[in-house]
Length: 328
Image (cartoon, rainbow, N blue to C red; front, side, top):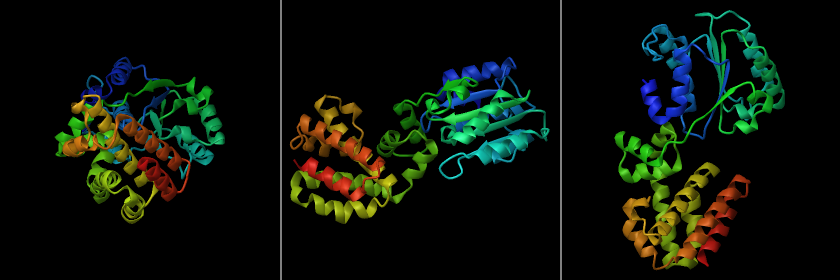
């Protein structure tokens, strides 16, 4: 079970601030936990909630064994409410229902906590209703808003919350964590470049497409180097059938981007920074074909392709354009 000792390794500054507030019994009525995906916002919220509700608290550390801790772990604590977007947004009705729930007396204690994931996805009406809720907080109510971008929240909401910025894990730390879970170093290093979310990394590592995508990146580069006239055929016959949706396309393009980063690392005499460590010999052979400038140009082309996918350009058109740019 996650505890404050574990969390302080991942988020030392934020953990210290929250533990101090618990020890001094000076818990704010509203927090914003801001951090990129994978920084542990949800896990931190759950741990903080345990420390608020646990009746066997010792130096701010929850026992992880009492009824309150177990209910929080199972998602069934009656005084902890977790709000997630309904579709693409958090809607006015969800905040209205939250207010209704909080008008009742706590079932287990006099405290109530609510956690809102992707708080920046509130509709305008939901934001205004939440603002009114924050303006008149209950004596023992704690709000925790989770977001990757606190600036997307109303300034008036920000001003009523304590904003805590979570820092991304160092890539080396995350790689070591994945290795400790049994992943080979080659996979762990690649995954640490794709995500900093532990659950997502472990899920990706077990998916068949991940192994296929790594292989396709190497094959695409080989085709571009040795049979460039066949590159478009490769994209349509090999690449596109595996990368069936935009999310997979984005991840595959990121893997391709990392290949060109590795070439640039070799030119910069930084072999220890290489991400495709199993393909070092192939990468060194690639130096014969890709000058530093061509590798840099290709890297920039891949970044532009990723942006075009975000703008809903058709994936096949994106890959055709990218391939033609890399052929030059």
